[in-house]
Length: 151
Image 1 (cartoon, one colour):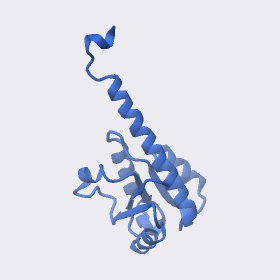
Image 2 (image 1 turned 90 degrees about the vertical axis):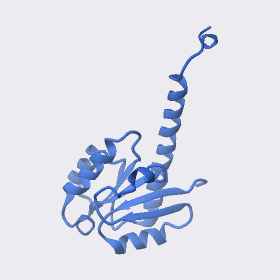
Image 3 (image 1 turned 45 degrees about the vertical axis):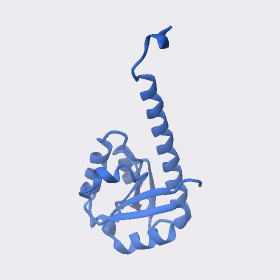
Image 4 (image 1 turned 60 degrees about the vertical axis):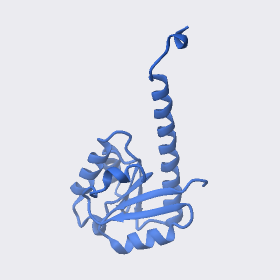
Protein backbone atom coordinates (compact mmCIF):
# COMPACT_ATOMS: atom_id res chain seq x y z
CA UNK A 1 0.00 0.00 0.00
CA UNK A 2 1.66 3.22 -1.14
CA UNK A 3 -0.51 5.69 0.73
CA UNK A 4 -0.94 5.90 4.45
CA UNK A 5 -4.52 5.03 5.38
CA UNK A 6 -5.92 7.40 8.01
CA UNK A 7 -8.34 5.43 10.17
CA UNK A 8 -10.61 7.18 12.66
CA UNK A 9 -12.11 4.82 15.24
CA UNK A 10 -15.37 5.44 17.08
CA UNK A 11 -15.94 3.08 20.00
CA UNK A 12 -15.97 2.73 23.75
CA UNK A 13 -13.50 -0.17 24.08
CA UNK A 14 -10.20 1.63 24.73
CA UNK A 15 -8.26 -1.65 24.98
CA UNK A 16 -9.38 -2.67 21.49
CA UNK A 17 -8.51 0.79 20.18
CA UNK A 18 -4.99 0.62 21.63
CA UNK A 19 -4.45 -2.87 20.24
CA UNK A 20 -5.68 -1.95 16.76
CA UNK A 21 -3.65 1.25 16.70
CA UNK A 22 -0.52 -0.72 17.54
CA UNK A 23 -1.20 -3.83 15.41
CA UNK A 24 -2.33 -2.23 12.16
CA UNK A 25 1.31 -1.38 11.55
CA UNK A 26 2.94 0.53 8.74
CA UNK A 27 0.73 2.07 6.15
CA UNK A 28 -1.91 3.03 8.70
CA UNK A 29 -2.34 6.01 10.98
CA UNK A 30 -4.93 5.50 13.71
CA UNK A 31 -6.87 7.92 15.89
CA UNK A 32 -9.72 7.18 18.24
CA UNK A 33 -12.72 8.90 19.72
CA UNK A 34 -14.34 7.20 22.69
CA UNK A 35 -17.91 8.20 21.97
CA UNK A 36 -20.39 8.19 19.10
CA UNK A 37 -20.69 11.97 19.01
CA UNK A 38 -18.74 13.83 16.38
CA UNK A 39 -15.57 15.30 17.84
CA UNK A 40 -15.43 19.08 18.18
CA UNK A 41 -12.78 19.25 15.46
CA UNK A 42 -14.75 17.06 13.02
CA UNK A 43 -14.58 19.64 10.24
CA UNK A 44 -10.78 19.70 10.46
CA UNK A 45 -10.69 15.90 10.65
CA UNK A 46 -12.70 15.58 7.41
CA UNK A 47 -9.53 16.45 5.52
CA UNK A 48 -7.55 13.86 7.52
CA UNK A 49 -9.64 10.71 7.77
CA UNK A 50 -9.85 8.21 4.92
CA UNK A 51 -11.91 5.53 6.61
CA UNK A 52 -14.13 5.50 9.68
CA UNK A 53 -14.12 2.39 11.85
CA UNK A 54 -17.18 2.07 14.09
CA UNK A 55 -17.30 -0.51 16.88
CA UNK A 56 -20.85 -1.84 17.18
CA UNK A 57 -19.94 -4.82 19.38
CA UNK A 58 -21.62 -5.20 22.76
CA UNK A 59 -18.48 -3.93 24.51
CA UNK A 60 -17.72 -1.28 21.89
CA UNK A 61 -21.08 0.47 22.04
CA UNK A 62 -22.31 -0.79 25.43
CA UNK A 63 -25.42 -2.22 23.79
CA UNK A 64 -26.41 1.12 22.26
CA UNK A 65 -26.52 0.27 18.56
CA UNK A 66 -28.72 3.29 17.90
CA UNK A 67 -25.86 5.62 18.86
CA UNK A 68 -23.54 3.92 16.36
CA UNK A 69 -26.16 3.89 13.62
CA UNK A 70 -26.96 7.54 14.38
CA UNK A 71 -23.31 8.45 13.90
CA UNK A 72 -23.28 6.57 10.59
CA UNK A 73 -26.39 8.44 9.41
CA UNK A 74 -24.84 11.74 10.43
CA UNK A 75 -21.61 10.98 8.54
CA UNK A 76 -23.37 9.64 5.44
CA UNK A 77 -25.49 12.81 5.33
CA UNK A 78 -22.41 14.94 4.72
CA UNK A 79 -20.89 15.66 1.31
CA UNK A 80 -18.32 13.05 0.25
CA UNK A 81 -18.52 10.91 3.38
CA UNK A 82 -15.65 8.53 4.07
CA UNK A 83 -16.35 4.80 3.86
CA UNK A 84 -17.48 3.34 7.17
CA UNK A 85 -16.36 -0.10 8.31
CA UNK A 86 -18.24 -1.56 11.25
CA UNK A 87 -17.04 -4.12 13.78
CA UNK A 88 -19.89 -6.43 14.77
CA UNK A 89 -20.31 -9.28 17.27
CA UNK A 90 -20.02 -12.68 15.65
CA UNK A 91 -21.79 -13.54 12.44
CA UNK A 92 -25.23 -12.05 13.09
CA UNK A 93 -26.42 -11.88 9.47
CA UNK A 94 -29.38 -9.67 10.38
CA UNK A 95 -27.06 -7.11 11.97
CA UNK A 96 -24.66 -7.24 8.98
CA UNK A 97 -27.55 -6.48 6.61
CA UNK A 98 -28.75 -3.68 8.90
CA UNK A 99 -25.27 -2.10 9.04
CA UNK A 100 -24.87 -2.27 5.25
CA UNK A 101 -28.38 -0.85 4.86
CA UNK A 102 -27.43 2.05 7.13
CA UNK A 103 -24.44 2.93 4.99
CA UNK A 104 -21.54 0.73 6.09
CA UNK A 105 -19.00 0.10 3.35
CA UNK A 106 -18.20 -3.27 4.93
CA UNK A 107 -18.40 -5.15 8.21
CA UNK A 108 -15.93 -7.28 10.11
CA UNK A 109 -16.51 -9.66 13.03
CA UNK A 110 -15.19 -8.72 16.44
CA UNK A 111 -12.68 -8.97 17.82
CA UNK A 112 -11.19 -8.26 14.41
CA UNK A 113 -8.49 -10.36 12.79
CA UNK A 114 -5.78 -7.79 12.02
CA UNK A 115 -4.92 -9.23 8.57
CA UNK A 116 -8.57 -9.11 7.56
CA UNK A 117 -8.98 -5.63 9.02
CA UNK A 118 -5.94 -4.32 7.10
CA UNK A 119 -7.40 -5.75 3.89
CA UNK A 120 -10.86 -4.24 4.45
CA UNK A 121 -9.45 -0.84 5.46
CA UNK A 122 -7.13 -0.82 2.45
CA UNK A 123 -10.01 -1.64 0.12
CA UNK A 124 -12.15 1.11 1.70
CA UNK A 125 -9.27 3.56 1.26
CA UNK A 126 -8.95 2.72 -2.45
CA UNK A 127 -12.71 3.18 -2.83
CA UNK A 128 -12.43 6.61 -1.16
CA UNK A 129 -9.59 7.62 -3.47
CA UNK A 130 -11.64 6.61 -6.52
CA UNK A 131 -14.67 8.57 -5.26
CA UNK A 132 -12.55 11.68 -4.64
CA UNK A 133 -11.00 11.44 -8.10
CA UNK A 134 -14.44 11.04 -9.67
CA UNK A 135 -15.70 14.11 -7.78
CA UNK A 136 -12.66 16.08 -8.97
CA UNK A 137 -13.26 15.08 -12.58
CA UNK A 138 -16.94 15.97 -12.33
CA UNK A 139 -16.13 19.40 -10.92
CA UNK A 140 -13.71 20.01 -13.81
CA UNK A 141 -16.44 19.08 -16.30
CA UNK A 142 -19.04 21.34 -14.74
CA UNK A 143 -16.65 24.23 -14.10
CA UNK A 144 -16.93 27.55 -15.88
CA UNK A 145 -16.70 27.23 -19.65
CA UNK A 146 -15.21 29.61 -22.10
CA UNK A 147 -16.48 30.16 -25.64
CA UNK A 148 -13.42 28.41 -27.08
CA UNK A 149 -14.27 25.27 -25.02
CA UNK A 150 -17.64 25.06 -26.70
CA UNK A 151 -16.30 25.22 -30.28
